[in-house]
Amino acid sequence: MNQEQDLIAQDIESYLALHENKELLRFITCGSVDDGKSTLIGRLLHDSKMIYEDQLATVRSDSKRIGTTGDEIDLALLVDGLQAEREQGITIDVAYRYFSTTKRKFIIADTPGHEQYTRNMATGASTADLAIILIDARHGVQTQTRRHSFIVSLLGIKHTLVAINKMDLVDYSQSRFEEIKQKYLDFAESLNLPDLHFVPLSALKGDNVVNASDSMPWYQGEPLLAQLETINIEQAVTDEPLRFPVQYVNRPNLDFRGYAGTIASGTVSVGDEIQVLPSGKRSRVKQIVTWEADLESAFAPQAVTLTLEDEIDISRGDMLVHANTQVKPQRNFNAHLVWMSDAPLVLGRNYALKLASGGSNAVVSQIHQRIDVNTLERSPTSVLSLNEIAEVEISAQTPLVVDDYQNLRQTGAFILIDKLTNTTVAAGMVTQPQQKAATLELHSASAVSAVDRASRLGQQSKMLGLANADAELLYTLERALFERGRLAIVATPDTQEILAQTGLIVLSQFAEGSDWTASNADDADLYLNERLDTAQRVELILDALEHCQII
Image (cartoon, rainbow, N blue to C red; front, top):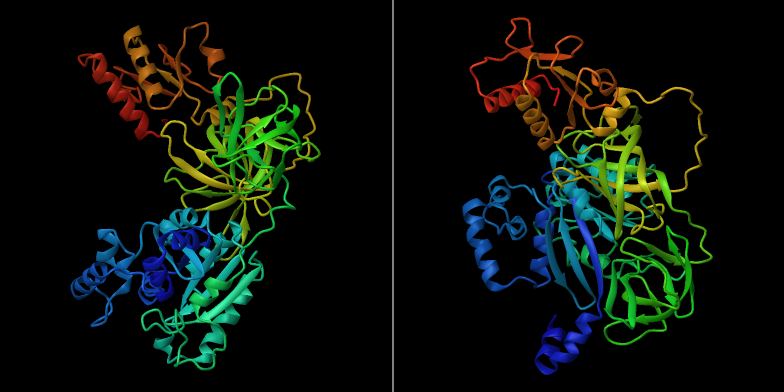
């Protein structure tokens, strides 16, 4: 740190160049509640001299008022920024922090430990190179430790550092450290954690965080920060297949047409024959353009603009690959799905799927099995709720270039978006991109039921009988249901029977044969007072339909 300060004083441009070229490591801290994640990050920032004096003064003041460490400074308050987090002493949102040493730059994501915030943890882990999983030495491997370890494995994080924290509370016992280490190794056998390291530490006291601990002479490994500085995170990009998602068609004038984007994997050079997917058209790379200068070749994750020798139709969302690559766009593929919405997954419902720079309308056509992340047991299910994980089959409306997530993260990761609320409801990781073509079954009569159609629309197929209702009531209710994300249609006596098979909510003037009725008759499911105006009756009907869980 002193060397960097001297360089800043003597030659600021050299310092900036040095800082710019440092390798960046993104890592997350996760584990069970109160394992000391925020305290560990605070200790890293404090002991690596990355805290300003005014920040430190504020934390000292807050420690006396709301701290949880007695007379000592509560370093967790450096990270827990939300008022609710400070008051409860827990992490709720993903907190990002930046610091650097002479060897590396770091971006830390402090993820929440509570089960109801598992989706936040998955968000923080999605871009990480390394995961620090904390374990309280007093309690050992907990349920949330298993949950987070499974998500780390699921998201393809290659490097895992298990930090057994609060060793000061177990008298720095080597036997306790070895016991917890072995239990974790037994659990991790079935997970994809290829590079696993262990370190005993005390974030509160600073043992083995930045400096080696005098209290644990039996530990011969490096402190946490030294491991973060030296762990090898470089990935060979030359052997990976080219994936170039087109983000923007650059057309500043009549003489230039370029295709801009970030290379997701692999390399590309001038003269390479490429193929455009899903169209299958081919051309050769004429020019690789960057802001600074043209390049002869480029590699992931560089952002470049490619020009081609031929004028072919390419738009945002298309994928450029090498012509000799054996890859075929898929409509159906299997994936692990982390459900992130309070509303449960609806099989067959249309969602917007976003993958790289493209996407498609898609449905979850089947849930193969739900995964219990605490025991790793699989079980059949037809419902997926908040924070649950399952193996599913995705059916997209248009073909997509997808890869196995464990091999190519950029083109193996996707999200599902609710088309009505525009909220992200799930994060997915492709597991089997190449699906065998299904055998086509022949049918001489309709093999799609009203229930099938309604499931695809994400609603119940119901016939609503509104006896003697006038056109104003029927069409006002039809529009009101549409505004609530439900497809309804007003039937006539001639169309009532056939519309009942469409999966729509059918509005009829006749009570006979209806699933639910509303009128001024005593035997109706909902009594409608004739003295109410149209708006009042529609609101009354909507409330009743919600109460009956029809909409």
